[in-house]
Length: 418
Image 1 (cartoon, one colour):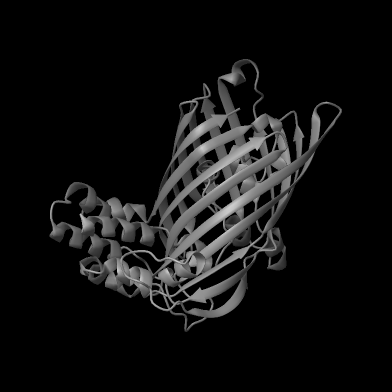
Image 2: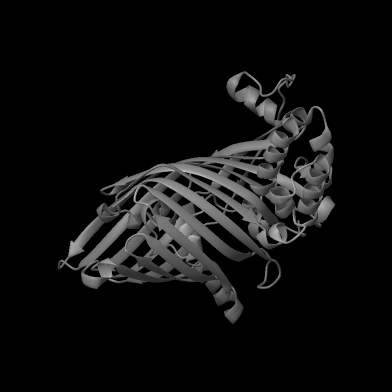
């Protein structure tokens, strides 16, 4: 049981660390929004409920009142390789009868890791509240990223985030049917990595993929993870600005400047237990971390994104109360688009398109194109309990087709939407 529990911890650790290293750089923190992602990543003009907290604060509205206690999400990357016959997830779910089966599952998991930056798994929990023109949320997540040449030589990096957010919107209605809204949102984000410095070639930390079996079989595997992996921990207070124009809640045009002031001030420590000791005076596990060592401090910037979008929805009246359609299109990173030579690839990689069909306020079917890659989603809404499924492909390389990576995500939400 100890080994199975440790294996589960390591699996979650590996799966949750990839998101921050997408495209080879640490990105702004944003919890995965399953609806947005299944609609091709569109969100600037089409986000609803808790999605607006990181998409566009101008969309906070009294018509989208929301409370969630809580929402849970698990995402597996490289899903096709994991579930194919003989893959890690196939062995874990169907052949988990002996230590030899677990060893095979770990080996298959290691072999599925590709070269360069990538994601393995992520887990997220959050709670949110929107009423009137105010939105509040508390989000936490664990991610595991991979970097290196792939397979056993890959380095796995754990990322943990805790974010408290506040968003305010100021709507103005003109001539009854025309609404202009300005919004601002702020996020206090605490962030940690199991790597002392993401930008230094000589960085120490992380976990060799090839060492997973050794850690799994070690009697003090938890002590190794807690006391011998250098970590970095810090915070930032990024701010989002948004604008939206809506005609009768049918046609919406919107702009958002996201992640302004996204500079993280980081402090390094000699291990997870050392960080925990400095914060609380105690330690995790059964082994004392010894002397708490604080290393160097540094800062890094996450990019600002200026994005535009529009959405078109059917009105909530007549037949449309039972069959609701929403189409959306976004163009992200406008500054990057116009600062580079204009080309078809540059437009495609920054384009997001999506379509949603909602039946009887219960079933949602969605699909989209994110940088030219397909995404699909389904929602079953039990009114106070919602299940969301997402399958999508993201590009992790510098150019389209360099490194597409698929993902499967499932989310559970207990809450009320109005």
